[in-house]
Image 1 (cartoon, rainbow, N blue to C red):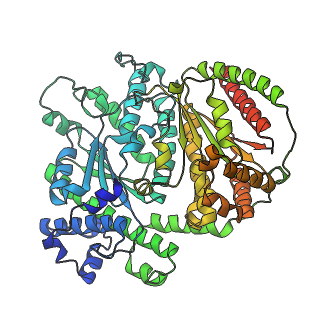
Image 2: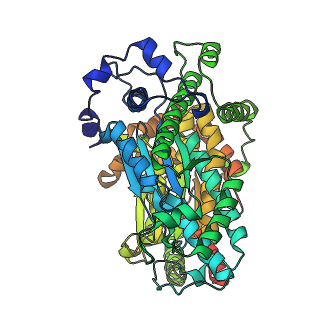
Length: 577
């Protein structure tokens, strides 16, 4: 489907295409801060379309792409927030009129209460733009954050109104029992890390805050009735509420210094300024992705010094490059623990196994159904034929099939590669926003593929997989902080046992589908995979999401050990409920 969409994407308008000479395009795509230039309408519109198609071309990477590019596939996410009646709608409307509207995605939310047991950003991940796209997102995760904070703030002032209860949402009374300032800072720290990981994985951000003073807002409001569809669902006619909002907004903007503040006093001027900012953000995204492409492509046509001289980048991009380079320089493989090399061969009789299995499955099912709605994520990794599938089969046997989802993760689809690499896992997490009742997700292979197979096979650059340890730790910490239980397994067998299981699969008709040519090829890189596993376990075994290593050649014992660990983790949860 993705390939079909790519081939039917709109062509560059002929009037624009005729102006895509290499020199003109290069000049037009050089980042220029808004403070250094102000284009007239025609020049700005042409520059916007040029940058828009240059971003689209980063995804195409074909000889016929216009304009030509060697940039790494890159998208731009424009977050729009701020005061009501500050010109947000007019600004985005003008942008859509001035660019190719078919290549500009626009989404909007008004702010809702936090959903149970998931990070505040999770429900919005399905809306993220593909690489090569520009997306404007009204409200977004900041709308949800401000919705929550405003209810905490007004509750502190004893002015909160009763909110209708909804079992899929947390009402104001169920928000954290902390001061709104503490809650806001904690959430902003998580969002800062999330947005940093988006930018590092080629989804650049522009955050625009539209502002007007209270007097201008009052003049623009046409009635005195509170409108529940207003952004953040607050009463913009109430001056005390607005004063509280301004206090919250000031705290947000002081904490995060990457917001562009747009004065909405004159809506026409605000729209022009917004379009300039979007242009600059597209140009800067292209500049940073060109440098990334140069650093990771051996045959790039331009030297590093030439690019540095040609492109005037912001300090933050220099810092990002310096940080990633530093990480790459200091990476040291860890010593391989004996647990991954000295594999246990203890045997267990089939009758003892079956008896223990039934008891443990019944106990696990009881704990899972007493978890009070908490989401549970099981992550299974291990050497090929180590028994992940068998362990998962026994794990879910006592459960109702409607209670869980199993995801067998393989190579990403084309449309998945056009998003940050964690995106295909973000969108599979249990989600209170959906109508599905399953709140247990089981991953057979996971996001750790970035530091395992992608590292060993060269599908990820050194910078990408070395950076991924910290990105994954932040991702799992966000889940755990929200109340999701993350249970991770590494299943280990020795090389001799793996060969025995491969031959058994080859000789068994109903198991032959489990064995692929890749499995045989991976045996030649056994030591590389063991080293990557050791590095992964050392760098991602955290307090919030620890690893459980199951190292045995006895598959019956491995299955029982998986159940024992799951029971232990869920029993800890039951003590906190």
